[in-house]
Image (cartoon, rainbow, N blue to C red; front, top):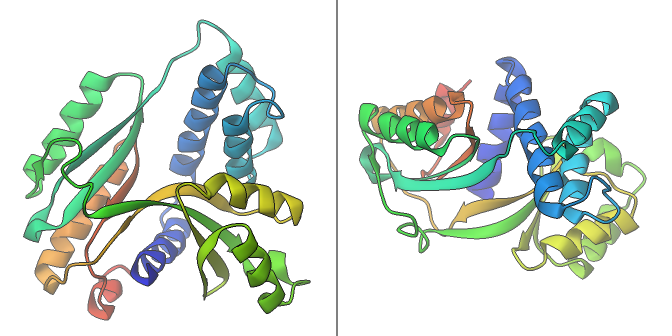
Length: 251
């Protein structure tokens, strides 16, 4: 998991550099819309999924007015309906790529995803073909500054009580991993402790990672970037080993 955490942290730093904030806001606004539609209520107290979306919105400092407008808009029966979809395939050098998207036009999305796979050295596979490569885990990211009053050993004991499988302290963040089943338990635990995560989401963590040379690694990073530039794509998970040399290419 450490490699995946490192990738997440790199994306966090890089995101600040290349102004991906708007994309993050768009993704969260879609999450709010889906939560209101599927949960059947604009009230976060009775809609756990909406409560999670709002927590993620606050985690990236989305203005309260934006959140309220999104909830009100999604409550309109004539508002856009979004669908969550996933695509699985292989990129350059046989690296597994798992693409998560949210769309109001599935034909457009699958066409765009297929085109990116084809153009940049990959191949789109069938859904379920990568299930043996990735585990779905709960991942919570908390800035260290929000834990300044906590003794870290005591804090970790609380997290274990909430279902934490692994806790990593790296750079300016603490990353907590749980099983898929304990995702809700960890949400409740952090609420009990009055700790607000910057993000709390389900991610697909590779069981093992695959080494590639620098040139192939750059090709994989390129196809991931092309996916992430697509407005419908939320996240791309992969099983590529991130060597120090590859990380240097991302600076």
